[in-house]
Image (cartoon, rainbow, N blue to C red):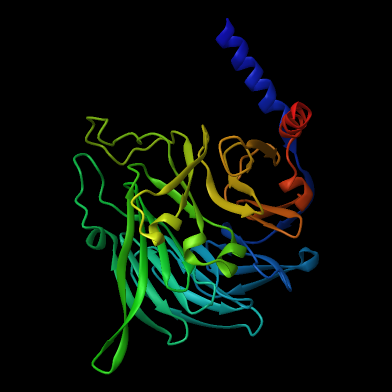
Length: 381
């Protein structure tokens, strides 16, 4: 009975923290939307979306839209290179670098397989393109491939019993010469891009500097954009999202069908590389929290972590397990791809972009339960 009461109390607390967002408007386009990202500068456009037939939908101030046909196949991912340029990956292995201000583009094809994810360094010089177990490093300045990294080779990993072939699930530049990636089998790696002079020419030589095996599928890696632009590499906190439990078909299952997976929650930790750069043997790992939901597309606003879930926009406030969470309800359906810009939340359902009222004060404001807790602590002091 006591356990039931505790569960009822937790349920009531979660219900109290559920917030329904107000729908401002809807934007309909002709094609199905497959990806959407916020604009970093937000000067001129709020966010950019990609469609299943190769269009780029630019949402400008006042929610007016401009559609540009930049390819013919489905968009898989988008990342912003600088104020005017976006890098767009496609299902057929093409990558297009598009300038929204000049309406110009160029394209490359690093693979014939679908582009998994992209990341651009903050200086706008390098683009990391993930395909399968490979990361292709492309120089925007030279418009040429400068390095190719095989995750299995550089990590020297072997597939364990009942494990699938490893593949890269997320890649992130956190510095001009510092790249992180996570893999399906639970590896996190830090790669430095070092220049080496060979036959009177300088070439990029990737070097493994750090690795950690978590043993669960890495969902994503995220850090604050303002940290990337201002901090030294050794001062970063990298937030790692990974599956809380093994997926069905891993070593815990005797079934030969290892491609059938069920989401079993998400665990979030913080990795800090201060000790690593100082040469100390211990690393700083902070547990941020555990959710029963599958958390996708993480985005950090100040100290709040935003993620998409099947129930709505989940927001965690605070940097450790003593923080709290709120669930923002966006209609009757969960959230897939989303973007947040200038106090508005953009969510996607098929060929419609829903625009919700989500001001910064609402996103970062501590929830009532946390405010009461802080008040009680202050009174005790």
